Image (cartoon, rainbow, N blue to C red; front, side):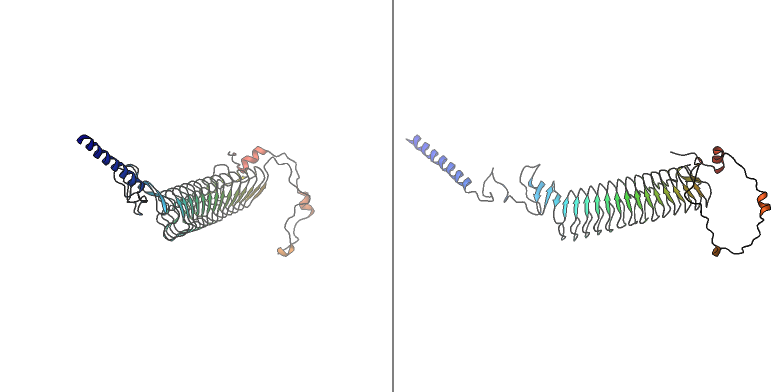
Length: 372
């Protein structure tokens, strides 16, 4: 009888324990904070804003991914919408816009992009360290690793390509191509399209570089136009216009020169420093320092200043539908005298015919060999 009684007591206790546990689980509150070990969890499922609550294993916890106005990954803010007191800022990547205070309408995608921005607004940075050092600059667009990386306070620049406008502090520049306008410091209103176009520009203004390495060496000069791969590669002068592959490539200090055509003004290996020259036609060329000279036509060459040459020695005819007009106007003449001998002078003339020696012509005008 005693044994049965003990069994009854043990059975009642077991039933009560099972019944109590089931009831406890069914009545757990919404925070799950009234469960006992081993199923007890933190006070609530939401981490505090100071990132002090854990949920999970020792290695991976709630602190590794939580929401508090942003998404944090491994303790670093990764995606955020509003930063500081500014409006409508969007960031994706570590350290993006982390110093922003009042800047608004910025978009930063890529680690360190717009990291130092404080009050700059309307900027778009896509790529690692794009617009990295920007603080108060506005309306800049940087696409590519290190694009506009060292811009701080300048405005309205557009950079597309790795390192484009890398150290720029100028305004209203446009650079499209890897390391285009790379060294631009204070220059403004420059346009560069092509790999390394305008690469060395420091403080030159209102230059246009289009083509790989176009205007590569220019640093301080203004108002140049270089269109074509390698065009104006060595130029450091101002107000030159070079159009064509390698057009004006030899020029260094020359100003106000025009070269139109492939390799126009390029050849012979001598650096050119002349001014006011015009070369129109493929492979047109001149001596290194001529002034106000003109070469027109394929392979035309000018050997001295204030000279015009049309065509190369193979040309057999130059003409048009009317006679050549010499400038002659009595209003521009003075000391006019009728003292020229007449018939006696004409009788002394000795007209001849001849054949042109092209080899001798090349030697006399010192035409350099054509350089590819």
